[in-house]
Length: 539
Image (cartoon, rainbow, N blue to C red; front, side, top):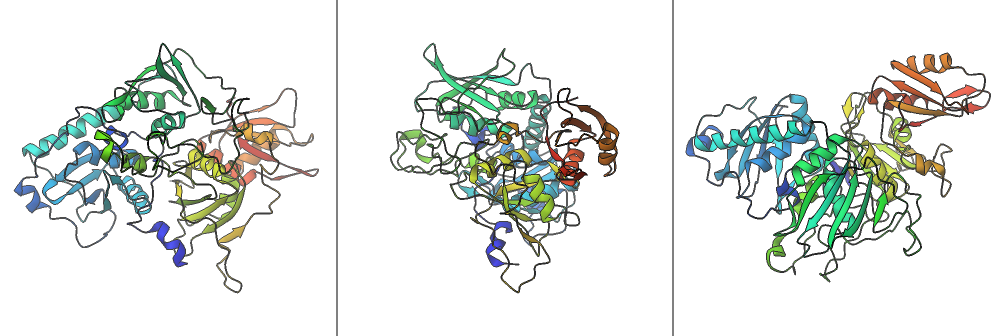
C-alpha cells in the first residue's frame, strides 16, 4: 500500500475528528458548565488496579471490552461512557484513575468493532489529551461493589436513562434558542457547530428580540431536536457565560430566503445571499470560527466554509483572558467535522464491505451529493477508500448525509482525509482496478452552475425519485426492475402531470441506497437512462 495513504488509517493520527452520526454527546466535550462537578474524582482503589493491569500487549482479537489509555487525571465516568454511546449501549465500566485508564464493555462485539474501527482513524481528544483505544484481552467486565465502582455504575444508569429519554416523541423539529449573558459574540456558524452533534441542521435563523440574542433551528426529525434540548439546555458556550436556554418552537418548519450570516438553509445552497451580503462561492468561503469567535482575538486565523456540521479543529487561543485561557474546545474536535479548508475535498470512507464494494458503487452513491472526481479503494485495506469530490462544499454535503448510513450491511464511517487529491497508479503499476478517475464522467449531476439538482439534495430515504422514464415503461416494469435486485417494493406512484417521473418506496433506507447504486443510469430503452435520487416525499 502506498505509504502516503497509510497515515489516514493508523492509530495515533492526531487529525481532527468527524461527526459520530446523530449521537448523544455530553457537555464536557463541547463546552463547560459553570459549577459542574466531576462525577468521581478519587483514585481507583488498589484492588481494581491489581485486577486489571491494562492490556499492554497491544491490540488483541475483537472483544466487547474496550481498553482506553492515556486519560487525563480529571476524567469523569460520563466522559468515558460518552466515547462508547454513539456506537451502541455501554453495559459496564471500570475506571482505573490511578493508571489513567478505563475499561468499557459494549453490548455487542459488533458495536465494539465499530468503536475501535472509528477511533483507529480519528483519535479522540479530551482536554488536550489524545486518548488511545484498543480491544481488551478481557472478554467481559466483572466489577465489585467498591465505592468508586458504585459511582461508575450510577453514571452508567444516569446516562443510559438520558439516552432513552431522547426517544420520547418531541413536540417539534424546530428549537428556539436564547443565549443569555452574551459576553462574547456567538455566530450562526457557532450554533451550527454545537447543534450538529445531534443530527443534521437543516435550517437556522439568528436574530435579536427584546435585547436578547436568539435563534430558530430546524432538524429533520424530533428525536434530534429532543436530544439537543436534553443535552444542551442550560450549558455555557464559554466558561461562565453565553448560556443556552432551549425550548421547542411552535413553528413546524423554517422558511429561509437567503444564505448569509443571519440565516441559512443547508438544503438549498443555491439561495441568494441578499443585497447586503457578499456573494458566497462554492469554494474558498471564509467565516470566523464559531465557538471561539475570532473578533476579540487577533491571533485566530482559522477559516472554514459554511456547511452542515463543521467544527473547529481544537482551536488553541493562547491570548484568551481569564477563564478562557485554557479553552481549546477539544471536545468539539472529537465529535464534529474537521473544518474542510478550500481545496481539501478528499474523504476517507471506512467500514466498507470489502467483498462487495467497488469504485463504481461509491462513485454513484457519493455522486448524489456532488461530482466525484476519483475513487481509490485501498489495496491492503479494502474496507477503506478515498473519495475525491470536486470541491469542499460537496465533500461536506456527502459527509453529512452519508456518515452512519448502511451500505452492504455495514454503517459507513466518513472522515476528512489529509490528502488534497487521490493519486492515480503510476504507469505500469496495476492496482486491480481499485483506483478510478471519473473527472470526465457524463454522470456528474452538478456540472452546470446553478443546476436545479442543488435544490433537490435530500438525506437518504426509503423513497426514491425516478425521472427520465420513457412513455413505453409502465408501473409494473419499474416495480419488477427494483424487485429484481432483492428490494421489497412497498409503493409506487407516477407524477400526475408528468409520467416521466415517479416515486418508488422500498423496504428500508439501506435497500434504497443499494437500489440507487444499481439502477441510476439504467438503460430503459428508447435512448432513456433512468435517473434515481433520494426523495423528501413519501407515498
